[in-house]
Image 1 (cartoon, one colour):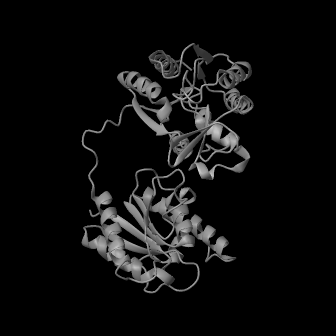
Image 2 (image 1 turned 90 degrees about the vertical axis):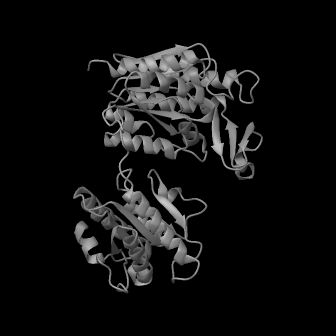
Image 3 (image 1 turned 45 degrees about the vertical axis):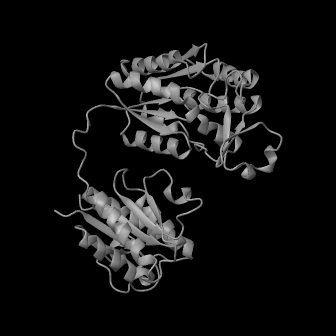
Length: 404
């Protein structure tokens, strides 16, 4: 059977564009249907799937209220409609067209589909800050360059190539020889903790696990926790908890106030360390908030500025982590590298500050409450020492083999 693509948008203003994209997808070997999610006028032309069908999946009528309310309600209805289509095996991928409101509506619906289901939006908003649309999903945003308001010489080839990209994803065969029976071990990493995580990953992989490394950029941690909650991940080595520093201090890569909670709720083997808690992330140097003037900074690159955490901030970070773990009824192990928590936190490096790092580690030692199945393991060296990688891997494998 041909893969089925749903081409979604507000057909009262983008009906012709939706029809064009669907025709392109059919030409490329897919079964494509247009879907109306408009909240005002009638579809023009009519779509294959009306907004009434979408709304009926949520058991609601045409949404009322102001524009934001209508968008929110229709986005929720779209999510329920797509969930039903996916659960019934009737959906291969989704491709949307939208401006600012339409992109928000479509992203709310598309983002609830599982990771791996192709999802794409051609959008006027596909530049600058897109985290509000993409969030912890694998949604692809394609810049439309011009408004999605007429099939002109700029928009037409963009839409056609978006249809081709979606068709390529939908038609791609499953990976040959993929190993699906190995349990997945998630790991968090930054460039400054790469040696640590690479070493632990190799040990865990040799023990029959499939390592899955997440970049600790705020979004990375949220995606990891979403996959843990879904049952796709069977254990976690949270070596790089730097997203907590951004959450506490106010950086641009926060893990959210619920960071770590999905993992402890799932009860999977959980090893935690203090990787990159010596730093808070910002964008280009000129974007650092004025309240941090006079602090110690390191320009990682033109787009990323790092700020050294203070002893006071580190004590707050330590209390946050300890609070999450102490509330857990599941087993865990915390590995504390007493000689430094990142490549920048080492003798001769810009963030080497034994007093600030010591405040973090001392707070964790004081606040954590070990018990049956809950341990704190000290490593007297640096986080990137091979011995620290070995200790994290050993603790993880010990928890994984522990009898409940």
